[in-house]
Amino acid sequence: MARDASDARVHLVLVPNPPYHPNGDFALVDGRVSLEGAPRHTYASDGIYTVHLYTTNNTCKDTAISTVHVINERGVISLDSNIYCRGNGMTADITGVDIANIKNTRWDFGDGTIVTVNGGTKTNHVYLTTGKFRIKATMTDLNGCESEYQSKDSITILGPLSNFMSEHPGACQGGMVDFTDRSETDSIHDLVKWEWDYGDRVNHVYNRDANFQHTYLDTGYYTVRLTVTDSYGCSDSMRRTEYVYVSHPYASFIIPDSIACPGRQIAFQNTSTGTDLESFWKFGDGSESNQTNPSYTYNVAGIYSPELFVTDINGCRDSFQLNSLRISSP
Image 1: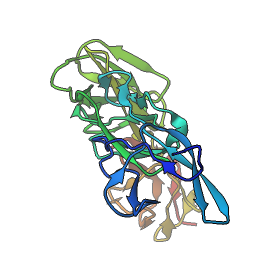
Image 2: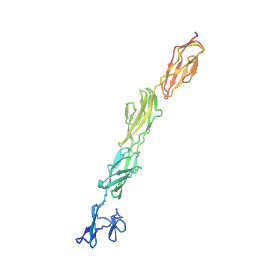
Image 3: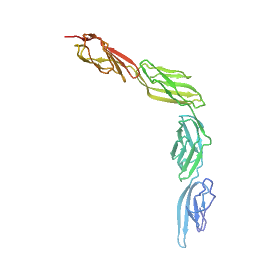
Image 4: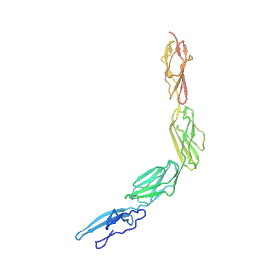
């Protein structure tokens, strides 16, 4: 707006509405500036404008002052690369804009992930699946005006997917566990390295597919991790928590006394340790039992050697024998 020297008239400089802002900024209704009405007009360029409104009658004059912030931020999507490994971070930004004029930016990464950045344009993202993706963004300025963007080309996500299993992820102490690699490639690049962390401070790196085996010397639960790398250099890891259980049962039992009379019932108390134990008893006179804590009566005098056999969840076994149970009459 501009005033002429006589203070009697106000002049507006109007320009055609640009394609990206077809609705314009304001209208002129009966010579007055209005936010409603048609046709609507647009400021010639972006910036901060101080608008003066002058009114007068035959006696008095008055002036109203207001500030109008016209924003026209036009940028372009900028990516730090167009090829990424799955699981690695990437950076997306809209360059060529004044961040001070931006309210927020809504990113659509094409994999179902939507991210809104308040007060800026830059963000990071990690793709968890391979393939090609087109990135889109909607930038909103402080006036609520939106600008939509799309990456020029699709980005490509490469890389393997690590996976493994064991048909029998359990073993006896000192036993061996077999592992099967079930990793998948991105259908373009072959796997070239397999790195195993067996959870017992032992790592092994293979440069070819093989029969993956490991011997565990101590009992306990072990977390196993497999990291695979392909010919492009992309890697992926899979971790199975407490996947392997290595066990060693210990058989033992007690009886109230090592001497008993014939015909007197003896209670055998199983004190074995282990996981999911199964018990089997031999009483030394040809009789047997699979109870955990059996009671048994010897009818014939003599010296017997009852024996307990235990088997745990991994099929590991141990036994304990008492060699001095005397059955005799007073």
